[in-house]
Amino acid sequence: MYIDSINTNIMSKNEQATNVLIDKSLGILQIPEVSHRLGDYNDQLTRALNRVTHSNVNTDGFLELRAEADTIPVVIRSIGEYAVLHARDSAMNPHQIGSLSTQIGFEKATVADRKFRSYLSSTAAHKALPVFEDRKDMAVKGSNWWLPEPRTIVKGRPYVSMNGDAAIGASLSPVVFLHELMHVLQTEANPVGSTDELARNKVRGELEAYHIAAQIILGMEEADRHHELLEHTPRDELDRALDIELVRINSQDSSDHFEPNDKVVSALVRKQHAITSEISDIIRKVA
Image (cartoon, rainbow, N blue to C red):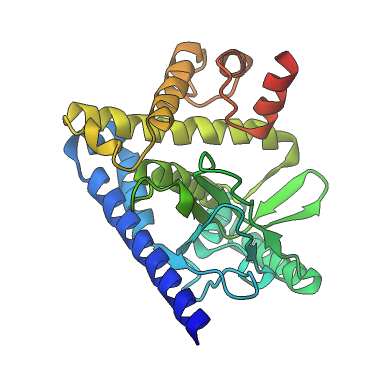
């Protein structure tokens, strides 16, 4: 009974932290200077925040995803805490199916969804969430996946996990959370891709997500509210986002703002910004 009471209190604390995180994120997006800098992204992120729902980790280590399929699950975990996304909760969400329908047609998208669900059901392909190793691991966006044929990957329902031990005081970072929420939107917009382009698309996705973080920081500075960021986000994380954005701007030689061309990647390596595991490997080899 005592243990159950402790678990209930922990879950309530985490759920409250999620609600505070959502409120702080919405508050930031409502700052005129931030909204102006983000442009269309502001509306996209606001709509996404309205779909965010808290999820717990049950006693068996699985995420409890009891909400509607179009919601975005958020789970708060501690350093070293293990958790698993159950196969039955891993299929594409309605937004992913809608995006796929636009790309290949409703009928083909429906068939792909059905086959994905069949694969998950027959294989019980549960997906372990990355374990947070220290306070620097602040958050992660993830999903299950399916490889229906060579060179093709289908991404399932995305979730966000926040490291509760990385909080400053009682607050998790809305800047980091909005960065991860951008990754959710990327997964919803492009649920199917080529494995050949996987590394390239990871870099593209990070450049776009760090652009979001940088515009939030710059908008807060313009609103003379930059000091508020330090209440929930480490200074080195803020500096990192701004520096990656500057690298992108100064190194980009394409009309595509987030094109991960050789010049951009080389600059990231030179500055030792390991924004993906692939770039991290290059940095280690160069060093």
